Amino acid sequence: MTFEGRGHALYLSKLFLMTEKDFVPDPYKVFPNEGKVIWKAPSNIALVKYWGKKPHQIPANPSISFTLDTSATTTSLTYKRKKESNGSISFDLLFEGKAKESFKPKIQTFLERIETYLPFLKDYHFVIETSNSFPHSSGIASSASGMAALALGLLSLEKNMVAEMEESHFNKKASFLARLGSGSACRSIEGKLIEWGSHNSIPGSSDLFGTRYPFHVNSVFQDYQDTILLVHKGQKQVSSTVGHNLMHNHPFAERRFEQAHENLDKLQPILAQGDLEGFIEIVESEALTLHAMMMTSRPYFILMKPDTLEIINKIWQFRQETGLPICFTLDAGANVHMLYPKSIADKALQFIKDELVAHCENGQYICDQIGTGAKRINEEV
Ligand code: PMV
Image (tube, rainbow, N blue to C red; front, side, top):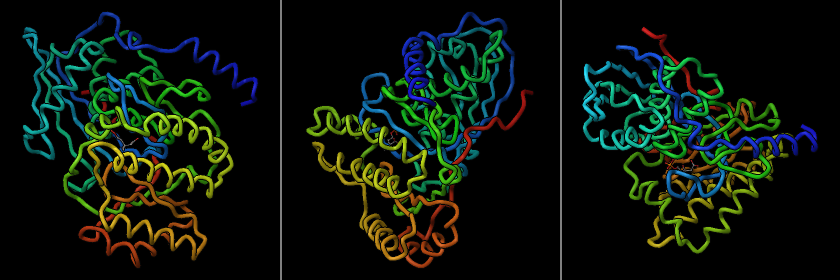
């Protein structure tokens, strides 16, 4: 886009800024009696991190992520219209084939939160069956892929009730709903690079939903690889919700939020030109900054484990010795995401087998790559 074109697009995107009201539907035309819809939604890994939020799941700073491919949640939503609406939300929940009561409160809160935007929720009974592609309790957060898959299922039902819903509105609303379940879930609807959070120089960017990164992305990033090294599979000591809240009154919060805006600007030419050195510097700095925020909050906490640091040091050493553009990022946990171009996949995997597997719990890692977004698995029955 030319500079002039970009200015114009920015002007237009500001003029047509969407608000929450745009996601409240018109009165429904029809109410299907029953049916089933299945969606598979991927996880995502942030390059510029979201850490800190305002009320109603509004991010304190913009973020950008690679949508993943194989790490995903598949959710089947069976719906049956109640004979009479009893004014309450009702659903059964099965996780990997078994009833899972402990997951219900989170889903209940989510459904209550989105009822204004999906006012049919109390008119149906739902059976939600969900499963993950990644090993059970692998320490990989399934909230992003899980909330995205459920939001998509519910929205597919709404799509049958309204006269028409354009694909672009469908994707925005799915992302908007998923965000209300788990912030980063709004980046798990589409691929391959998704930006979330209002940012001055990114046209169409919004705090309410994720959007496709609008600028040119060099081919080297189109099939980037992410091997997730499973360092610690147990439950995190501090949840993301608690962590986000600790950014309130955090001594470095304001500077950090500005830095995220700056890093997004810096990434633009890096992504366009395929500048791997520049990419590595921003991505690794973002990962360490995220964890630095945790270590400097009150109360402070550390989610990295000794093996996380061993892996980081080995990646640095390997990069120095071989010159190969392998880098790491982290999410809110001890696992390490190793990022590299597809062209060096053989060498990267050999390096993992030779040096890094010893630092993974039970020697486990997951080979993933950048993906194209969520997919509908079944047609309407
Ligand atoms: O979506 P949440 O509330 O689980 O927060 C996720 C935050 C990070 O994964 C640490 C960073 C990010 O942008 O995904």
